[in-house]
Length: 159
Ligand SMILES: Cc1cc2nc3c(=O)[nH]c(=O)nc-3n(C[C@H](O)[C@H](O)[C@H](O)COP(=O)(O)O)c2cc1C
Image 1 (tube, rainbow, N blue to C red):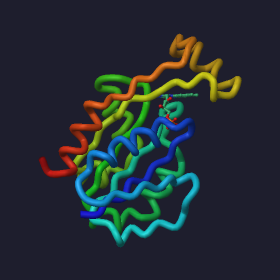
Image 2 (tube, rainbow, N blue to C red):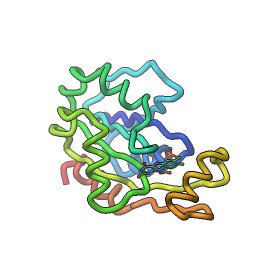
Image 3 (tube, protein in one colour):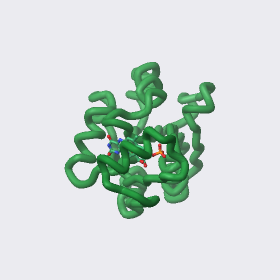
């Protein structure tokens, strides 16, 4: 079973989660960063997992474009969908459903949020200002939900 994990990540959290996930998947898995690669061979894979992070309620545009441009071919695959964000609880599902194509959400074997990170050191002035103002976060914060990654991998592995 070959798996392709495609993702977009601004400060590295989604990349980190994609790598953690790939270690738990059975069979061969390849990782592709949508921000640096546009030569993706979907046909070589049985399973496609798509992940992205949320900024101001929206997933990265590269993820939207990838899903939109490949929708028909993706519908023939086993699909997994994940997001990285700082929302918790029910809000995670709302953000996921709002940001992925409804047909992909419907057929996904696994879909979940993997948590997120605020890396203030890497943010520009405006982002830092927004995060401090809205989330009241003043130092770097990591909240990666490894349990969710584990359960997601189990679902994709058919366990
Ligand atoms: C400017 C800014 C806006 C954000 N907006 C949201 C948001 O609307 N909802 C949310 O749940 N998380 C939000 N986040 C948190 C990011 O989704 C989180 O930091 C994520 O881990 C980033 O992943 P990445 O490093 O892979 O891009 C925001 C973060 C920043 C810096």
